[in-house]
Length: 217
Ligand SMILES: C[S@@+](CC[C@H](N)C(=O)[O-])C[C@H]1O[C@@H](n2cnc3c(N)ncnc32)[C@H](O)[C@@H]1O
Image (cartoon, rainbow, N blue to C red; front, side, top):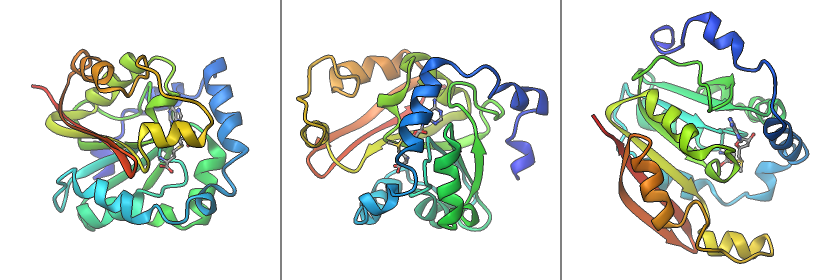
């Protein structure tokens, strides 16, 4: 099934050419955190499983975990699509993917070293994209979310998730949320709409952030 989803080799090989400063910064940031990423957040598993459940995946579906990191979402994604489904995890930071392999998450899905800004996937080839903790790190969010739309079929689903809400995350990081925060509903809804997604639900509470959207025709 993966052959029908991966783009031709020429597109795949171009992806990691010429890293931008944004990419270097992201890689440095997450490389320093990769080894103990999972042990810093040991209790998040049920929250990931609950968020994945809201994608409404069916056995045999094809799903991408965009910015998969150490692959914490891969087990529930695999459980949702079953052995006949396709689970992909894409991330820009090799150290995070290495940690995913050490945790055995490569048994749940195929890991790709890839930038979500230029995915090595065919247009319309997926049923859903799950993205946890990704959006805040995207240098050009409108473009990048449009690229996620490109690889999803019309009617497919996007979940933007974080295991804690915006205010709780800001408090953890010693800052306060501002109205221009990309994930604030008044900003996120039009951003998604301009990129081919219709937002269908939005939850921002201490225990989780979850925005769901459907790929427009
Ligand atoms: C906050 S971590 C979340 C990791 C994982 N989704 C989780 O929930 O544990 C964000 C991840 O996004 C990745 N990332 C950031 N920008 C990316 C991009 N443009 N393309 C692919 N991955 C990216 C980082 O390397 C990092 O692993």
